Image (cartoon, rainbow, N blue to C red; front, side, top):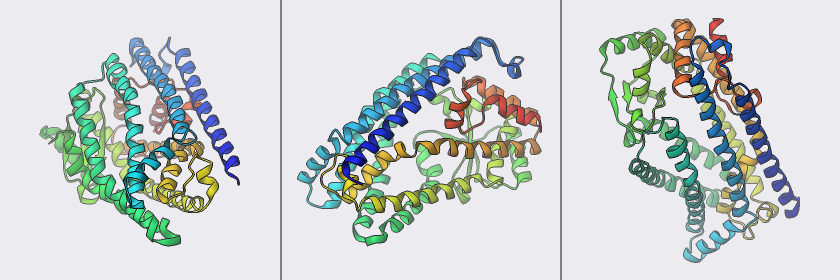
Length: 414
C-alpha cells in the first residue's frame, strides 16, 4: 500500500464513521420525539408523563451534544494528522530533548494535554448546562477544577512511568516488543484494580462504612447466601457531585468493596436495595468481570501485534501526515486512529455486555423477588432520567444494558 492510498482509506473510514454516528444519533432523536407524547404501556402505571418527557428531553440534549462532539473529534483528528499538528509538536519536542524516549514522551503528553484542553468546553457544557438544567449537577466550579487537578496529577503519577516503560520496551526489546508491552499493560491494569478502591477513589469521594445496621445485616445475609466475600460495605457521597444514583463493586481479590451511592439508599426500599445488589452479585457469580478483563487483554494483544506490523511500514506514517517515523509516533498515531477503524466493533461489544446484564438479572431473580428488581429499575430509570424509548438500532450499537422495556419484560417472565 502507498501513503496516498492509506490517506484515502483513512479519510474514507473517518468520514463513514462520523456520518454513521450522526445518522444513528438522528434516528435516536427522532424515535424519542415520536414517543415523547405517551408513556410506554409497560410503565404507564409507574411513571408519570412529565417524568417520561423530562427523560426524553434530557436524553435528546445529551445526544445533540454528542453529535457536536463527534464532529469536533473528527476535525481535531484531521488537524493532528493530515493537518500537520503531530508533525509540528514532534518537531518542537525533538528540538527540546536529546533522548528519543524523552522526545516521544513529550510529543505524546503534549498531544494528550492539548486534546484534553480542547474538550473542556464540552465537559463544562455537559456538567453546568445540561446536568444543571435537568437538576442533576451538584458540582461547583471550584470542585470541578479541584477534580481536574487531582485527575491530572494522578494521571501523571501513574501514566508517565507506564509511558516510559512502554517506549523503552518498544526501543529495546526487538521484534517481539509488543509481547513485553502487553505483559506490562496487563500488570498495570491489575495493579490499578488493586489500588483503586483504597488509594485512588477516596481522593475524589468520601467512603463511609454503612451505618444502617438492619440494612447491613440484610446485605451480609445475602452475601453469605451467594458465597461472596467483601472487605466492607461502604456508602459514597455521590450527592456531592450529582443526583444520579448507583451501586457497584470495586477492587480485586481481597480489596473488593461494595459501594452504594447515598442517593441510591435514600430512594430505594430495603428489598429493592437487596435486588440491585443481587444483580451485581450475578456479575460476580457468572464471572463477567473476569471474562471482560480476559477479552480486553486478548484484544489489546491483537492491537499491539498489529501496531508492530504497521510501524515497520513507511506508508503508515506518511499516510497520516508524519514524515519522520519513530516508535512513539507509531504508538500515538495507532491509538488515535484505532476508534475510527474499530467502530463496527461497537454493536458486538454492546451485545456481549447486554448478554451479561440478562444473566445477572436472571441470577438476581433467583436470589430475590424479581418484582423488587423491576421496581428498583423503574425508580432508577425515573431518577436518572433514562429514556424508556431509545431507537432500537442506536441501542444495539451503543447501549451496554438492554432497553428498559425489554429488560423488565425479561424479569417479569422469571
